[in-house]
Amino acid sequence: MPEFLLRSMLAGAIRAFPIKLKVPNPGSHMKKRDAERSLLSALSCRVFQKQPNPLAIVMLLCMILCFAIQPARAGEFEGVYRIGKTRFTVKPVKMAYQVRWAKGHGSMFFFFSRETPDGKYLFVSEDGKKAKDNFLFDDSLFLSGTFIRSDGKQFPVRKAVK
Image (cartoon, rainbow, N blue to C red; front, side):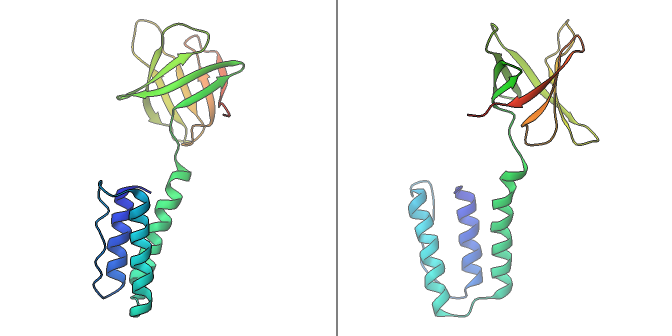
């Protein structure tokens, strides 16, 4: 669980229950497991001592739910992909994405260009004297899409299963 999420959950829990409780700050010196235990013990101790503020609890649960759902909606353009039987690896490098073809030498760099009006994501190869290659993904999960070669030929792209 990320540290900022633990801090916000702990702050929400302390606001929800009106008594003071000393709980260690989940900083970098604390292990994640210890921080989660402190949060759980803080919540369980406070529940039995006083009535919680219902609005604060609802807000805390909504915040937790939003953070839990967020990763399911967005993906990352990285990992191993396939075009037919050809595999390639994508790795983020600064503001670009490095594509290394399994059957090729060297690598190509692609940059995020834009989101199309129909919700597809376009990545374009770096500028050069040659025409550009494109990846056009169906949605923000980057699981499937189309590779458009510089000569205009299109190939279906899928994220490889591990």
